[in-house]
Length: 203
Image 1: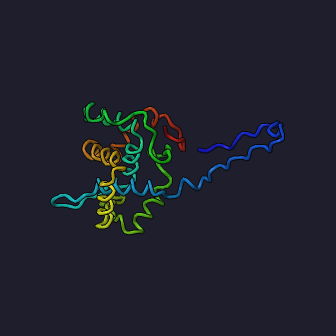
Image 2: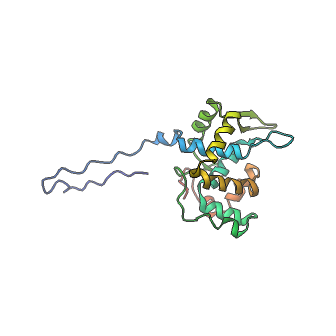
C-alpha cells in the first residue's frame, strides 16, 4: 500500500517548498473490480466449469473459488502446494517462486485467503452475462461461464499475455480440483496462512 510521504520539520530549508504528501489510497479501492481480476476469474471459472461428455460442471462455491484464485495469484505457494499434492518437480520448474503475486494482495479471513473485491468482480461478470450462477444441492452456489463468457475466455487464452495463467490453471485443474474445504486444509499447511491474523495481508 502506498504510504504517506514523510515530511521532515526542516523540509523547506534551502528555499524550496516542502514535498507534497502522497495521498493514501482509499480503503474502498480494495472492494472495486479491476479488469485484471475480471479476466483472471473468468478464466478460472471457465477452466473449472467446462462441459464434460454427459454433464455440465460448475465451480462449486466461493470458498473453492477463493482458494484456487489464491494459488493462481501466488506462484510461490502454488509451487509448494502442487509438489505436496501430486505434481512432479519437472512440472513446476517453470513457476518462479520469487515472482510477485498477481494483482492486489489477498487477506486472511475466516476460511483462509479472501479478496474483498470478489463480490464486485463476480457481480460484474454475472451482470454482463459472462458467468451464470445456480444454487447447488445442499448449500452454496455454483459458477460457470455462459456461451459468450466461454468464448471470451477462449479469446483470452489465445492471447500470449495470459499464457502463464492458462498454464497454472491446467495444473490446478489436474491436481487441485478438490472441494473448498480440502483446499482450505491444504493452504493451512502453509505457515504463512495458518499463522496470519484476520485481515492481515498475505505474502
